[in-house]
Each structure stands twice: as C-alpha cells, then as structure tokens.
Image 1 (spheres, rainbow, N blue to C red):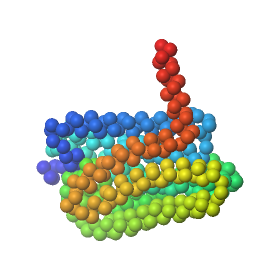
Image 2: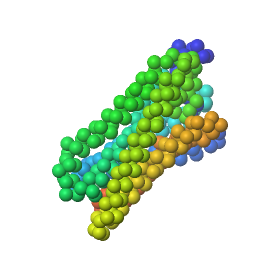
Image 3: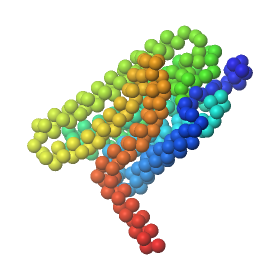
Image 4: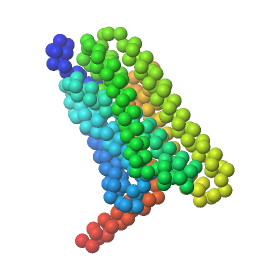
Length: 315
C-alpha cells in the first residue's frame, strides 16, 4: 500500500476526526459557517466596489481583507467538508493538490498580517497627518501598498514551500486536517533542520514586524489623540482604530494559538482544531466587526436591506 501510494503521488489526509454519528451535524455546521463567511465578505466587496461614496483609500485597502478571507476559507473548508463525509481510509489527495492547498493556506495567514499593517498605516496618515492625507494616499499609493502586502506574502511563502518540495518523501500520511508546510516536510525522512531554522526565523521576524509596526503606529496615534483637544478627531480615531485593533487581535490570537500548540505534541488534537478555527472564525467575524462598525458601510447595508424589504412588501 505504501509503495503504491508513493508511486502514484497520493497522500492520505487525516482530516477532521469525528464519529460517524456526528459527521453530518459537523458537516452542516461547517457548511453554514462557510456560506456565512463567503456571503458576508462578497457583500462587502460588492458594496465597496459599486457605491461611489465608499471609493476612498481606507475602503479600497480594506477590500484586501475580505478577498483574503475568501481565499482562506475556500482553500480549506470545501476540501474538509468533502473529507468529513468519507471514511478516514479514503481521504486521498494528490501531492500537487496538497502543495497548492498548503501554499494558499500560508498566503492567507501571511497576507492577514500585511493587509492589516497597511490599513494601520492608512489610519496613521489620516489621524496624524490629516492635511496631507489626500496627497499621500493617492490611487498609486493604494495600489503600491496592496501589491506590497500580497507580494511579500507570495515571496516568503514561495521560499518556505520551495525548501519543502525539494525534499524526497518516505511517508504518505498528512497528520493534519488539511495540508500545510509542516505536514509536508514531515513526509520526508531527510534532514529537515533547514526547514525548521527557516520556519523559526520567518516566524520570529514575521510576528516582530507585524506586532511591532501595529504597536508603533497606534502608539503614535494615541499620542496625537492625547495631546489633541479636538474631540471630533479623537472620537473618529477611537471608532476606526478600535475596530481595526479588534480585527487584528482576532487574527493574532487565532494564529498564535496554532503556532504555540505546535511546540506541544501532547496537544496535537487541540492544535488541529485551532488550525481549522483560524480559517473559519476570523473570515466570519472580520466583516461583522469591521463592516458593521464602519459608519459608511453600515449605513449602506441598512439602506440596501430596507430597499429589499420594501420591494418584498410591495409584491
């Protein structure tokens, strides 16, 4: 079986461990979560792209977040839903498909941080340099910031996965609910110290850059708010920054939990569950926290719902 599997480049994915009795309830729950996350994020993108009064740098930068959330849920949940309804011994995936899934799963994780970093930069300019905001946050700057966030994620993840796919494979079981970099290089019997060192360095730099930039940005914003006597400015800063920080903390806690539990093999089941939650909770909560707390988006959503209800009532 091992030789046949390896020859055909097939891998066996552990998937989500559920009992036969609970497989359908879990399937329905995850399906509803997927539909909810996709629906909310798609609605936000449509609203921002079609409503002219939402065509501002802040909202265009925010569009990167629902796009990334759609990527994060789609790369993992449909496959997981499919595997739930299969026997554990029938959850096969090709090596190429596994690499693609791992690649985009890590793109999702990295882009979350970089997108929120450029959004924090936008809020810094808007609050600390309001008179220069329109001259700094031009369409070109928005495109440059967005391209930088995605480009950096693609570059670093490509290096990380490149170090993994160079390895030969002597195992065929992915001991995880879905494919990721760690699961892939654990398939090899070669020395993976290079992968571990790069992963450790990458994680340290990644979190230092992310947390450091967010902390510095909001420290400067807080300093401006404290020294300023403009109540309108302070109120606006609190509303927009608290929303952004809430989204950031949701993402940071979810991702950090998975990385932390990786260091403790005895909690592998908890880590696997946490890795699934990362692809469900932030994509589902981000549209609610950010979209509904942003006045312009909230008003547009309520107007559209009101029009829809009026049309239904007239019928």
